[in-house]
Length: 120
Length: 107
Image (cartoon, rainbow over all chains, first blue to last red; front, side, top):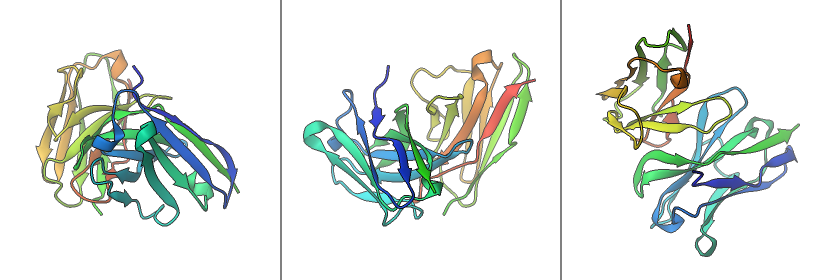
C-alpha cells in the first residue's frame, strides 16, 4: 500500500530549478510533520528538510539552506520542495516521508521517491 | 552535529544465523534512534524506533537495544528477505543524521 507519492523529478542543468511534490490520501499534512530525505546514486540516506504540521516550522540541512524551500498546500494536501540553484551534488532520489510526531520522531512512512538529475 | 557511525560496513550471514549491527553516536542521542531497512530499488522501511520499539508489522526476530551513544540492531535467525542495507538515524538533535549503513548479504 503506497501512502505517499512523489512527483516532479527530472533532468535539470546546474543552476536551474525544480519543484518536487508529495501527495497522500492517507495523511493530512497540516497535522503531521513531513520531511524530505535524499539518496545519491549508490550512497546512503541524507536528510534534507522538515516541515512541522501544526506550527509550520521548518528545518534544513546546511547543504541546502538558502537554496531549497519546503512548503505545503493544505487545500490540496500536498507537500513541496522548491529546489533552486541546483548543483551536480544534488543529484539523488528524493523521498517524501512522514514523521511519527508533529514535534519530532522517526520517519514512519516513506514514498517511493522521485529521481532528480542535475547535469553539469 | 551528531555523527552516526555504523559497523561493520558489510556483514555476510548464512540464512538461519543471527546478526548484530552496531550504531554509535558521536554524542548522546538518548533513545531517539531509529533503524531502517532498504532493499535495492525500494524506499527505506522503518524497523525500530525509540531504540527498541518495533514498528507495526515488523517480525519479532528484529530487536533493538542501547541508549545514549551505543546501539545495536539484532536480527535473529536471518531469513532470505532480510538481506539488504540497514541504516540507523538519530532524531534527538538538528540536523537529523543517518549512519552510513550496514549491508547484510548472503554468505
